[in-house]
Every structure is written in structure tokens, then in C-alpha cells.
Length: 126
Image (tube, rainbow, N blue to C red; front, top):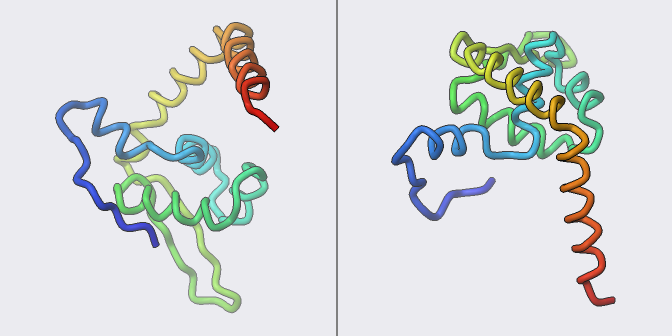
């Protein structure tokens, strides 16, 4: 497992939120868990581009940051479900606001991102 080699910079709220939510899939994981997708296989189907290993790592980090809890049921095969903690639920309105902002600026954001991707592809020598 990854072991951090440097101490994180935690001087302001933006540093803190970046430390907690840094990871490509964490915001989506929180959102989908809130929407009722609680089993790892359900989350994998909702985020098919992510590997199971990466999802597990990011779920563990969200658990370590006390945003989600994991419940393991004593059945065979083992059944695992994730749910948001009360603390994790406080992030949902923030995530919803970010999604709304993105929806309002969807065309512009898509154009900027695609322009960057296309220019990066051109700059790369074969």
C-alpha cells in the first residue's frame, strides 16, 4: 500500500478539502453511495473506468477520513456495504453545487478540456 513520504500542507480549508477529496473517483463514490449504491460491485458498475483496486483504495481513504463506513455482514460469501457517515452527508450539498456549476458551464468546460487534450496529443512526438 502507498505510504506518504511528506507531511501534507494543512494550512487552510482548501488544503484540507484537497487532502480529503484528492482522488479521481472520490467525489463520484460519495455521490453514488448517497444515491443508494452501497455494494462494491454496484459502485464498480457505476464507475466502470475505475479498477476495483483503485476504488477499494479510495473507499478505504474515505473511510479513514470518516466520510464513509463499511459494514461487513457475516455471510458466505462475505457481503460488504458502504454508507455515508453524518460527517460525509455534509459534503453532499457541496458536491451537488459543484455538479450544478458544471452543468451550467458544460459546453465551455467540455471545449476547454477537449482543446487541451487535442493540443497535448499534437505536442507528443511519436
